[in-house]
Length: 110
Length: 195
Image (tube, rainbow over all chains, first blue to last red):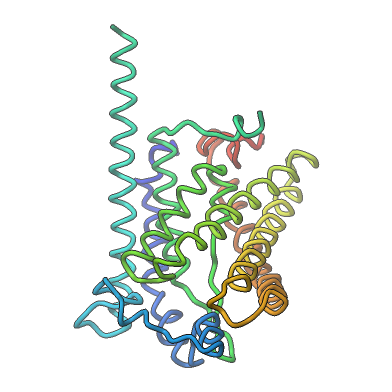
């Protein structure tokens, strides 16, 4: 496999998709079962600080949720959205790097 | 000189690997393993990024993950983004990369060296990132607990969590080492380990 093919690697994307599909089991179902709370949030509350994150939230996808979807499905859709943003960012960066390389080759040829 | 040697050219190939690794780390961080008592652990991946991509691209990969988590999902919070980047994209990446490279360079490219390098790099990366976090919150005037409390708690827990991080990092490094042909990974990382 050439390194440039990583982004086209079916095996890698299947692994990522599988992790996404099972993610609500860990992030929602088991977390609810043990009554999960972020330890640093609990320590902050014990220190007298108030959690205002929901009040000042700027995103509709707060804490990996999607408005109108049940928590489990929302978690998967939010994860897929995050992956899409990473892929688009990486793809644009790849195109910019390729273009710059092409421009450098042009300048050298002149 | 070592600093200069550790820089990789920004090629489309390297950005391609960075993109896939960032997506994988982002999803892996969503897999919280709940622990009795209401806490949980998840893979961080900074040391793995350093071992696979080198320190500069590893930093870029982890920063991309942390920025997406923060801006899109309000995970981590905007005021703590800088601290999170310092802990997970700088300290974890650099320590993981340096430890892996040091052990493989000193002891030669054997399976045991790669396993030891990957495990210790991932473990120490997490522990030192935890130490940095303990110092940051302990020194913060807003947080009610002093450094004498925050540092031992953070280092102690991360020393335990680092064992899981180390095992996962070893499995990924060995899997990729056996599957990928020589030259498929950027130089100065796992890609320069001779077979």
